[in-house]
Length: 423
Ligand SMILES: *Cc1c(COP(=O)(O)O)cnc(C)c1O
Ligand SMILES: [Zn+2]
Image (cartoon, rainbow, N blue to C red; front, top):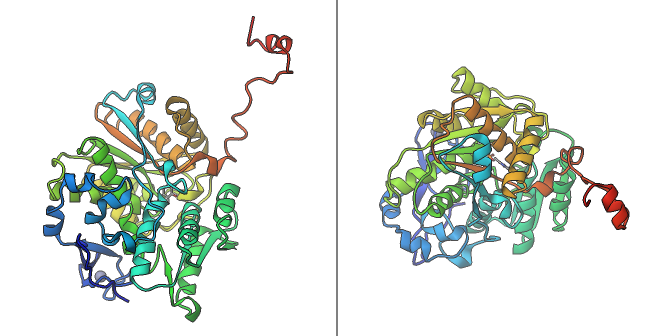
């Protein structure tokens, strides 16, 4: 299967797929691994077409990810999109958190909990589902740590496409319900995410699933490009400039590589000034294979068996780990890791100082920001953006023991007085 040539007014700038390992090139096909060396394939662009894109053209677009269609591989024709139209989520100024952390250069939270299914995964699924349609697939599917499941099921429901979602059976109840509610096929697998992922790559090879796009497997090159839109938006929302530092949570490591790629494209296309940036990665202590590789100076990432509350990040064998390490090292960044208590504290700190309620992945990122400042690895005098990739209501369990009523009263002023709320 190959994407058909684009015939719309805005041409797709995508030239083909390129192997990130050996550089072999392919058409816009439905493969994620190189036929020569099994390396991961990535969308390659015609830079002359990217250079022709202007701020004005983007600003005239819709208030969602499709304003960046001239920089994306698919979706130039609005009728071709299979999408909940995510994106243009708030970039929230976090002055009080900055003050607590001793960060003087300016701090922002890019809040992707505001997406239609309340995580950044809507960005990648919109690209994957649109590519799947263009490639002629009839169904969509995924292996997921939770947020992807929510988004695939919702996109399928909106488009009237059958979908098959595979998740570890021990996911948070909020994520299970939010996947199930859309009335799609939802399969609980008694195993880790890495087990689920291995299983779905076997299922994808069967005759029954020949016509199925597994959004993070056979159409992964297109899926992954959706994450670029988070980078584009941050730059646009800052008034078309790139922040000096960014802290990004990592599961497979893909999001981190694509925010960096987005900024390289914007500078290469002359859409923003070419100012330096530093990319920091955030992991939990329960799943820290990229942090460990960083600490040891390894180019390869050794798989781990994940545990802990940051389930959306619990990928023990991260496909994009080596490429995330490249971006972090090339830009002079670092990787932090934090334990479950620090993650909960990160969620509370963000909520108390900004009004943003993050899921555990956001707690990881905020806690890592604190750690990187304390260790002197992140420069507190430079402007910094942290990504909140998901909604706190999805992961209530770890908070229930630590927050709750501050007072309990009878419905009488006497009782309110006894509680010390009035004199
Ligand atoms: C999937 C996910 C990530 C990280 O995604 P990768 O691109 O696999 O690194 C971060 N935060 C949340 C909430 C996620 O669901
Ligand atoms: Zn290759």
